[in-house]
Image 1 (cartoon, rainbow, N blue to C red):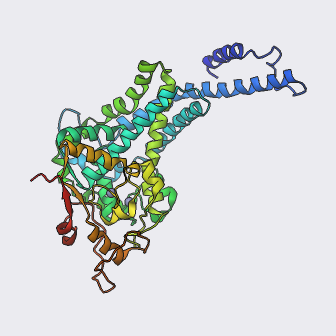
Image 2 (cartoon, rainbow, N blue to C red):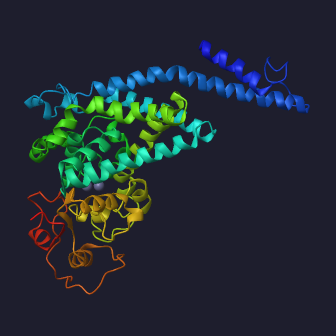
Image 3 (cartoon, rainbow, N blue to C red):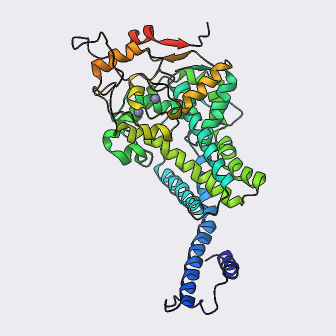
Length: 427
Ligand SMILES: [Zn+2]
Ligand SMILES: [Zn+2]
């Protein structure tokens, strides 16, 4: 037991006015005084556990930063271009399973401590609101930035918006945009096969988080370096974030959410760190993971019944609009990531539309109702509500391939490209 635990117990004992005679063991509950003793003892035990968590959180924190700073994918100096071989993943540096397990264990223990502080009311309301806002910002950086903008080219963005998106995505600590895009394009090209980094045919746990904790399948390793990443390497914002990833992640995901609540409204530094940094990070991490697990298992398949991805409203709420996953895998180049425009369940689309008003987002690609209708009639499970009179019939040609990662993919059917609606065109 750390010395601090005893000190805090003594102080708490005095604050709670626990009667004398309660120090030796667990008293019986024969009268009201004894009941008060029992409650006091329980309170002290819980706070001793909290003191232990505080004591070991520093060690867990060091392990966490060891994991992030030693990320083998970022070996280059922040101030020089990465060496040519750095962007090629090899078996030895794709995953270090031991370090990843330590990393996940440490962040979850710290997040649990943050959750305890929340449920026991030891957090200021402003801190909770701040954590929710910071988490929403990081989700939008992932969904509107790494996902719709960079992975799929569903719209284009001027450099100030790309910088904003890269910074927001960094808050999520889901590795750099470059690495995120590579894994995600692989996910779309080889959906739910062994080459898919989070193949949902291997079960909920594997597709949710298990894939990050064990060695990847050989099929993944054989395909990962075949993904076309030339566009990412040509985007200075992506490569700038790649090189500065570790210090940026430390600043935006951990240092600022710890210091700002303390500075602005006097929150305890440790409380701010456990709630606004650790708990917020773990919750947003799992909300993103749900897209790979829940949204590949539970829900309707109105656009293509032959694939695992589903329409999942709860996941959409948790991810600011990326849970309409059957639609997304059918039309991955639609900037709305969904058929219907409902900002309540698609906050990322609202953000993109708002930035399009000032010209920072442009070439917003979406699928016309006629094309959606034809596709739903041809391959959907019959649950699409707005199916109107389409010209698709059972005699239509076989469905186009769904293994398309986005607008710039050469496998994108010409019919889709010709029929696409493009808002805010640049030319
Ligand atoms: Zn996608
Ligand atoms: Zn998916």
